[in-house]
Amino acid sequence: MISLGHYLILSGLIFCIGLAGVLRRKNILMLFFSTEIMLNAINIGFVAIGNFMGDINGQMFAIFIIAIAASEVAIGLGLVIMWFKKYKTLDIDNLNIMKG
Image 1 (cartoon, rainbow, N blue to C red):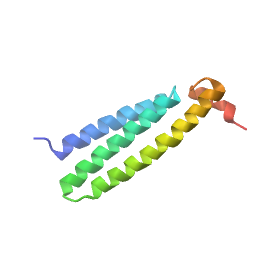
Image 2 (image 1 turned 45 degrees about the vertical axis):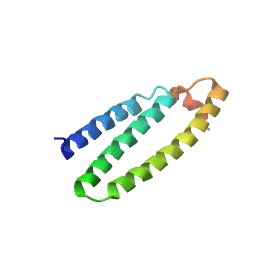
Image 3 (image 1 turned 30 degrees about the vertical axis):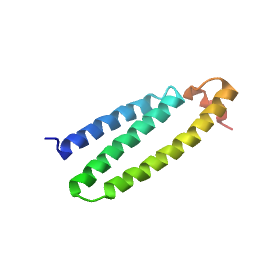
Image 4 (image 1 turned 135 degrees about the horizontal axis):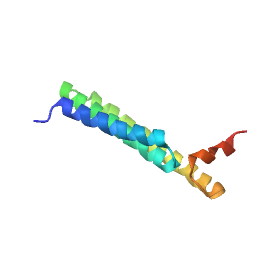
């Protein structure tokens, strides 16, 4: 039988994997992927807790987070494409060029 604890442990492990990717941050695309992994881990936790409590609030929060993640990807990928066309690299260490 899979309990709430199992889902929360899975959510915590996935979140830690995403956090490790964000902290490593060598490539801006990997930063976006790691952020998505962290948001999906939070979604698993919200849905599991909502199901455990018997209400729909967890699913509503998850849908809201999915909408935010979709807008982040749309805006972020546009910026990444513009950055790559201009500087021919996606290395985050080269973002020092943007300092004014």
